[in-house]
Image (cartoon, rainbow, N blue to C red; front, side, top):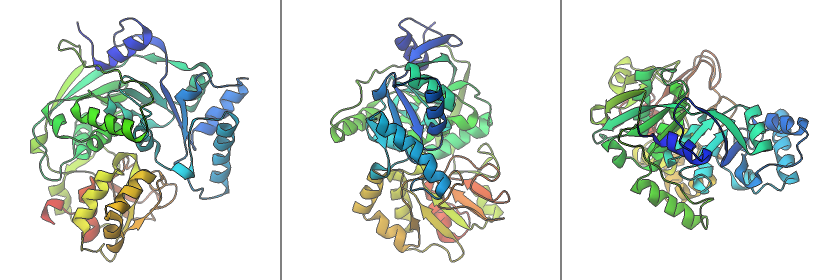
Length: 426
């Protein structure tokens, strides 16, 4: 019996063939911390008596959740990570001078490559699987163990094969595909499994779509999401190598064998999809845009951004729809580019002029609004259309508020209308 991509990545790191279900100890290629979770890891690291990082060039800290600080508590929290980074002369420390949301910034910097094993004390670390890597979220103490030893223990996950077929229609993106899949699986249907995305649809999807899909694998309970490297991936990596004077490491490209063993195979006809809206209060509560339009759902706020959909492609989609139009009178709109580079590129392309003239507020790169931290908190009973990844009770503010997850086109069109509408009708 052959192996899946995930089994091959683990086999390469162990040095011999392994299969799903085996427990292995391996070195980690990139450990990712942020200003919220890293202080806990730092405390565990220091309490252990460790004096130096086992693999300092395989560890990064990205300040992204409450940066710039929103209050004294968040400032002191950030201070812990800063002081640790300076003490250890951390090569990959990203603060306000080079801002970005971690799961957009690290791929942009060429710091994650195919074949890597990556962990982060953030559940959406699975984003990096779009580059043909095994990438998953772990707890802060697990992160500390990696900081101290350079590795960690894993159970090699089983894999669900997701076969996507057909060319996506107008305003159908990776966000719609993953919401459609979570609608099928539920929030725990892929518990501790890898979602491997395959099929002819993949060739139609750019990296932004692929990052979105792998990012939300966790919303089905998955340990990771992964997509095999193809020409689209190679072009992206070549661009990163050129911009950053090389990648962090040489890519190792693996593909699943034709006789690989999967625990489940799911098929989705992407050509038949309408834009999908996840109603409150679960990402699995997906409904077609036609139903949302029929339900006539008025909204108070629109948020375009996050590690899921804050890339330049999302801003282009929004700006194209909003050019020459205005945000509805009773609706607010927040746009959060995922990195400073994306912010500058959007400015260079004139996208910022279009969005601001339409009435949007553009913020610095931050996770703030997505996790209900700051920069877009919802009040009692307010409704928001968001391109983020979660719509749990109280996720973005008041417990009585409601979040509708959608792609960037739906979000932009709805901002104009003041209610959820189909962007294909704008």
